[in-house]
Image (cartoon, rainbow, N blue to C red):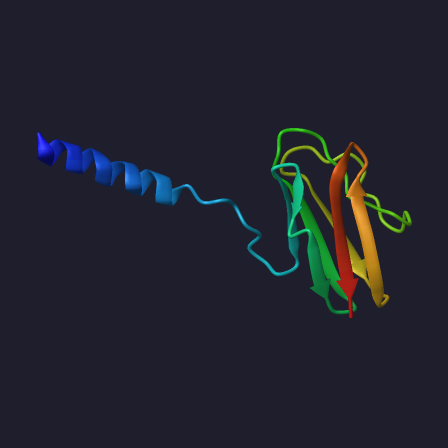
Length: 107
């Protein structure tokens, strides 16, 4: 009895520890996941191309507050890239979800 309980417990631990939150694989990537930008703030160097990927099944956008860049509608797994050639801070948002905000800091 205890042997089977232990095996079940060990199996559940393996399952739960293998369920990791998907994270960007590159320092120049931002994921749209859990109705948020991940990371919400990112610092890059001038001339860097940043890529956003929508990992959700609902439509999102990546739109700078100053309208310098705009992804348009992004469906699941769709990407948008923008090259930052000017030093500064670029706040952005999803036009469909007011609580989704992010910031790019270009040095």
